[in-house]
Length: 550
Image 1 (tube, one colour):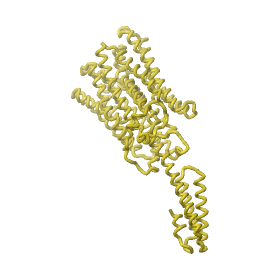
Image 2 (cartoon, one colour):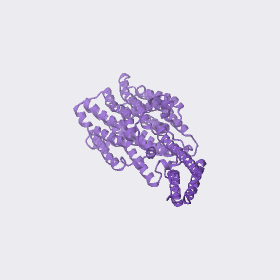
Image 3 (cartoon, rainbow, N blue to C red):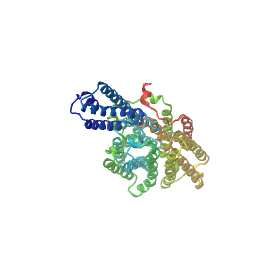
Image 4 (cartoon, helix red, strand yellow):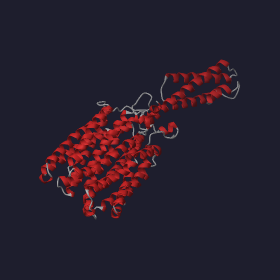
């Protein structure tokens, strides 16, 4: 501390002048202003006392008279200012660490403005949203490589002579790998950063997609292994992307960014169902979709590697204040004791049972129960996902507007979103099941098909509200642990995906092909249960680090 040493150690009649003391005092003031976050009157008063005392002491030493009382007063006031300054600095650090780590998302008087934690300049915003668009494209590819099997499985089953149980086995193999990497993916994203983990995840699932035709020629075990690899790669994507968004997007932009990035899943499903049939019919059969979609993944990887993976300017700035990364200790017990965490887990389980069950079986349902050809079934399957894309584009800005204008609280937005998604979906799916049960395949008409597809479109349109509900919840609770929490809840969700894809095929074989009891009614029941469980939800930030030691 230069000022304290000058005031105490310089002897009377020494070379220190009033000018040098004033210069030292200015340096001290600059350091204090840079370190302090608050405008406390106590800090200002302490600095004023120390500055006046220091200047007066410097002038007295220049004349050769340095009273003992002046030295004592200067030392005491200087130490007071330094102590207060340190406390202010610690308060700033705690605020930023809490926001980035323990979960303090809501603005409070001790929190620094978003400009101090994120790059809010025009150039920073441009880079941030470029990164969000890249995440969007990654999720488009993610679901392209799921849908390719949903469409290709129809001609593959005919060519290779698969039963419905074998079709369910092939569809579920993806989720074996997907389940395996959920928690490890969240841990890796928390430790090494979501950008790196996402890159290698895309590379792995693209490789698994490319080798699928060769593996199918070798036999069922090899094909299952290739789909397992795709699942391994895609399993890290949600957690990695959540980590990227939590560290790179301010809370005020969270609903829009999450909805945009994860909206790529819906666009990927839509594009896959739209372009997969023409590729199969015109570009050499079902192997073509695996070759093309796999190659697109490697193109995306080159883009991400060059533009975003090593760009730290899109990350929040808490690391510079805290002073580097520390060993990550996961508060598992605090997670388990938190009701909101369990609400997210149940909602995620239900979401995957619904979304992946229909994604895997919808083309087959339309072909078998509605007597629709492959090309037409894929086209009709597009309409529900098109509904999701349209509604997603509407609710992304709507949610942000309702929250910013304080029409609804963040908690209300999450609850209402989940109620619309699951409550409305349960009603629609029940109606579809009743139509299917009352209409044998031989009696299906164009009006029946129109009614079923219309109800499915309404169901998937309401499902878009999941983006402003469940998928924002992990970041609401804690940006620091958002990746690992999503990894845990997505593990439960991956189990649901496996159950949905496999047991739908199993139930079809046991019920003689009854789609209502095999697919639609089970999903509706889960959705109703999930609506009631999510009533406990609160978007209040949780400091899991403190809860861990409580």
